[in-house]
Length: 273
Ligand SMILES: Cc1ncc(C[n+]2csc(CCOP(=O)(O)OP(=O)(O)O)c2C)c(N)n1
Image (cartoon, rainbow, N blue to C red; front, top):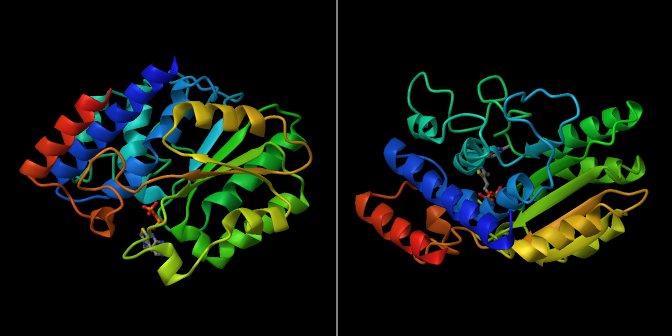
């Protein structure tokens, strides 16, 4: 797909995510919207090898979304990629649905690791990267981390270990939207200078605009050339990106849009691409 088509898919991820949350009257819109472009580039930009008809295909690349509360965006991306019907995701958070508030690998095809308890995704990704290397497999292991979870110590143990083991098949994104549950990261527990911290831990560091499809594409191309160390792509994003009244607003971390909010948001997103 070309850049325009990938951006279009990203906005479809955003629209479907908001419809899911609106219908369930609960969920996390802000952090779903901030990773829509990253997911779209990975699934539709030719970066991930996957087969929706055979989700367990041994040679597939792996994506671990460590910020499991952004499930609406993950389900929407997987639905658009053909793992299941996108309409099925509208049962989000209802009793008996596979599409629960946090992603569950036992219930949803294409989900590799169940997440929701923050701070564990990178450790899982590293384990998979090391296993792939032992198998002499060329598969790539991607992870999407949130900046809020980098406030947890477990993340830094994984960051230290990944560099120690020279896991060059591991590429992590940080969704650097600068907001966590109820405030700005720099006020609650500052992370800056984040690039320097990863560099000090011996990671290859790339920084880009996490809503610029071409920049995400070229950051990934650059990451594939890294030797003997893991790569982090610090994607500078906006929580609630794509919707004027949600953008960079702490309030929209975990609040469902009402009828009026949804109509306004969908109108804005449909006008974008
Ligand atoms: C271990 C753990 N502690 C607390 C929570 C509750 N919680 C849900 S989302 C969140 C933080 C949200 O901020 P961030 O991780 O940066 O996500 P984003 O802003 O990208 O949505 C927290 C603390 C959790 N899910 N897991």
